[in-house]
Image 1 (cartoon, one colour):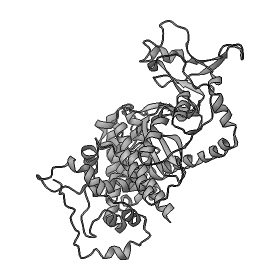
Image 2: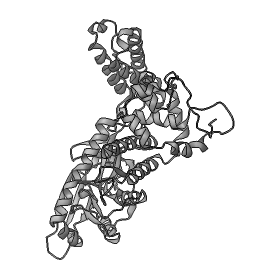
Image 3: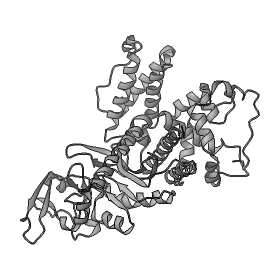
Image 4: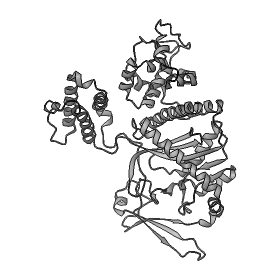
Length: 483
């Protein structure tokens, strides 16, 4: 049950916070900046209003998730820290003597209360509203880019995942006491998952018996992570058990297994829109959605800055129709010819190659036709025929017995003459230099807020992780600008 009334905290110890949580503390500043009542309003229909025992206030549960993202902590560790860190207790609107929640409550909150909420758009909207209200957004340009997030399971076998996590725990323990090598059980010699699980459980038990070691934070974090995976092995430890994750390509020689988050950010470095997709999706196809989402937040836009991935013919036409300056260099392999939409392959601008629907990248490219001969030249892309023979999407794509699989596109540079003229102007070159800002933002998301690896499996979990991480970085940026 959830109450419609926000309860008052009448603890006689509340004055402690005025002593131990200074005015310039980041969490105190966030509390002063944001009216979190929007969380209660958004989620109250997910609770019963007149039956059952009282639930933990949804605002407090939401703030726990925000703290996880701000400090890049696991469920167990953020709850543990809230026992003794007075700034966290103040932020969570708890009295100093209050008991903390059980970490398992956060899992239930995510699955039962947040599952059907468009959290990503709602939180971005909230932060942009705050920035506009504080009059710190002056620009009328957005910078667009995509950042990749690797799947939590990263195409490893269950045994490989367990071996990796148990190794990290042992390494952390050895830094404190090398004699633990004699206490740990012998490593498994079989390829059986059940044997590896048994070994990991024995390692966990050995560490938990050593009270002087297990209390070190670097050991505790690795221990909690391994325990979580062992306990959830039935649900999670299967080959590539991330049904939504896909292979994406960063360059011709490097790939990743996971997701992409397509971002739009204004020149004040506040993220104004985000779209989460599987890893193989093209960056350019998300541009129009990013522009429309940014405008829905109240942003006025007259310029869009991005790399070559965004200079597709459709995007140039869209920009012209909406009176936008598209600062994005042309690439000769933009259009897809006269194919049906469902038969189109995605172009990876980093690798300079096309990627098929199964996520396989072309292995070489050839150019045919004579320039200025009255007909368009063609780029032909060649795929690995052995992969095509085994591909689950081969029907209608690969002809049985064929010796090669190719994909050809026309080079239609004449259709982009206006954009080509624009990109040679001094204005274009000057505005294009602003693109570095979003690369720095991507780095901040990954290295300070754990966005380099997905915290759970599936697109739903990735949306939730993205929502909290972006909300955190936007709030931090607003506080910086207000100073």
